[in-house]
Length: 157
Image (cartoon, rainbow, N blue to C red; front, top):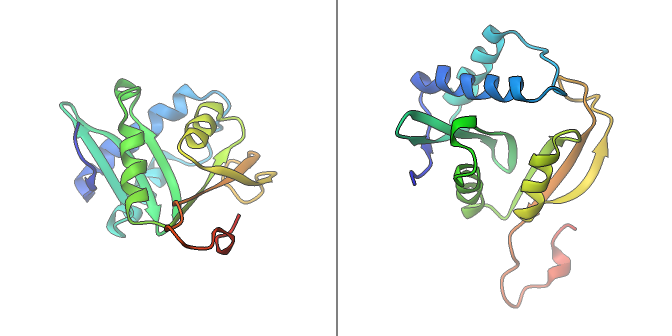
């Protein structure tokens, strides 16, 4: 399996196609941005260095967009699902982090189950007023295991 590496601007059209394929496969997800806007946002976050991707024999197959501890997006191309690519991206993000957080649409049950299996815990729910799609969402947080001998009460629960 390929290892995650930093996305470059020439990857943006491929990454956007992964995003759009997910949108087509999720009937509960309204389309609220134009493709041009999606491309501009993807280019902006790629320039900032937030995007890591994994390639397979056919090109970019999965990506994660992360600013520090906040994961903004994690998508796997439908042709590459069930091969551990999303898990690899998430594990790579965990390596240098004491804590990660994300917001997942309440309607996205597979993603919620995936994050729970990866150790993320639900900490809050919202009505979606803060996201573009205005969909109810769940705030989830992952904490790395405390160091041996550290006080577990010192971490946010």
